[in-house]
Amino acid sequence: MSHQEQSGQGPTASGSARPAGRAALTLVLAIALICGAVAAGMLWNAGNRVERALAAHRHQVQATTTGRAEEPRAATRQAVTTSSVAPAVWEYPDDVRRSGTVPVPPRTPQGRTVALWVDDRGAPTRPPGGTANLALTALAGGTATAAAAGAAGAGVLTLVRRRAEGRRLGAWEREWERVEPVWSGRLRRGSGPGTGEE
Image 1: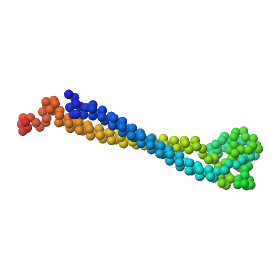
Image 2 (image 1 turned 90 degrees about the vertical axis):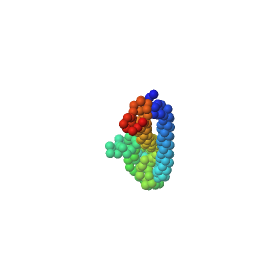
Image 3 (image 1 turned 120 degrees about the vertical axis):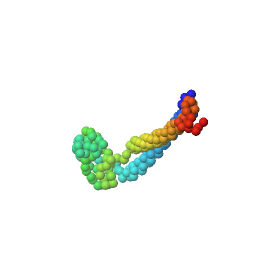
Image 4 (image 1 turned 135 degrees about the horizontal axis):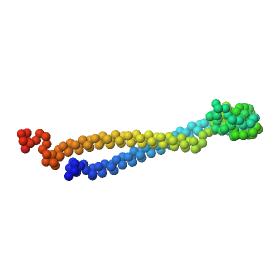
């Protein structure tokens, strides 16, 4: 008879622990997915509110280039979304003529009309964000939240499993110390002739 069978902690006990472990892991994954979905939804809603507020102060006007398109200077290249800039004039608010350097498609000639986004003061600004950008932000945030929740849950499971395993091993050792002398026929320490025990 084996140690596991004698102590009553054989394959049946370990087999029953495995489904419990899988169920706990499934629960952690489900909670992580729910946290990720909630975070993605919150980011989407918050992004929509911000974009709606910004869109109320973004205005598209028509600008006319007064020079040919050129490559932007290194200091301003990261601030534009196109590869070229050109001097241009536009009006905003109505009848208020403004001028400046605006982003344009490459090789735009002088005298070409281009679309330009301006703020309430008429200064060039970025266009309102699109749905794709909001979706990417929400997806990235939701994924990060799900990963963090899953890692935290897995850490808790590992800690609980180790503590349970320690208690189980301790119980096995105590049970084995009680059963092993009977099973092997070996006298326990403190027993036998001269000890007062039968």
